[in-house]
Image (cartoon, rainbow, N blue to C red):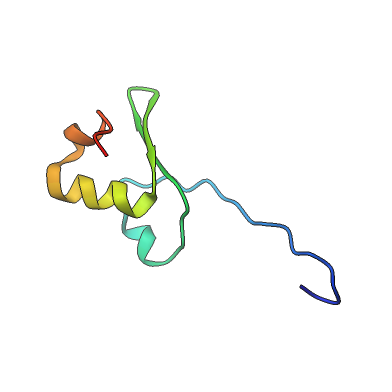
Length: 64
């Protein structure tokens, strides 16, 4: 806050194929898009961890 003026929250849409962008930004939410449909919506780091451990194919079923 500057002089009692509230700061508006910031948002952005970041599209990535590798997830390495999470080393540089803080993301509250991540989503998996598969064949034009949102298949999973969770914490971005948890989604990336799941994909690295179990693979992308299991993630599109949103088993988190």
